[in-house]
Image 1 (tube, rainbow, N blue to C red):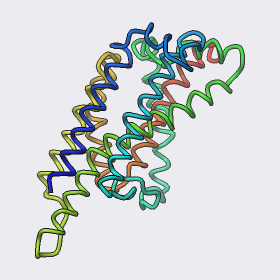
Image 2 (image 1 turned 180 degrees about the vertical axis):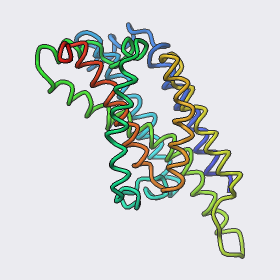
Image 3 (image 1 turned 45 degrees about the vertical axis):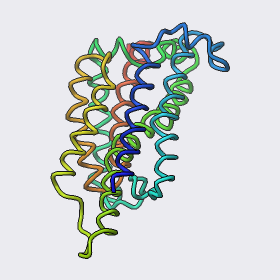
Image 4 (image 1 turned 120 degrees about the vertical axis):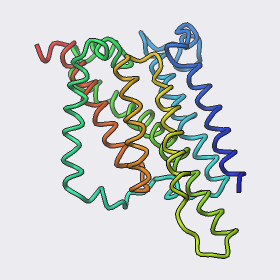
Length: 254
């Protein structure tokens, strides 16, 4: 019964350590500029793409591979488009609210000096219009936000809960019930810690907000058994932040 949780926690720990070591503020930017393929890109793009590649691999692809080895199904990991919440109009009304909240955050000097991850994006938007921003946000969503929510709320939270439920069903002569509430609380708190700590080096306001966000998105993933509702809200907040900062810095907002 412990094989699954040990494997998940071991890979999760290693992924967090490696990811932290090779993204800012720990990363030496000179290292990214010496890497093949992305090292020759102009400006800050080597560091920018290294962050996205590592998040896709360490927080997405490797945990997914481990999950498949453990015979966890995509639905066990929160990859479920059928959650009823996504069919409720009230939920979709929260998306523009999340964008506005992100934009309000982008108006703060701390976040405005840190985001977007490519500071050169401002110049490209000023000279080429919004097309570079659309490319930026597409990469941000699929290579960063999706792996992030999958790793913390899917792999570390729902993956372990699903494994425990399955193990209980195999070993107990009684009908299997949901994981114990105390285990659920422990896992929601647990996945919040690394997700918050990976914000070290970010603006203080964001570091502090990562704690309630981690708890909220964790509880939402548990209640819906899907990472998608939290993913869309999280990405919408990031969209609002980056869009406001880029439009303001490039002169579109005066």
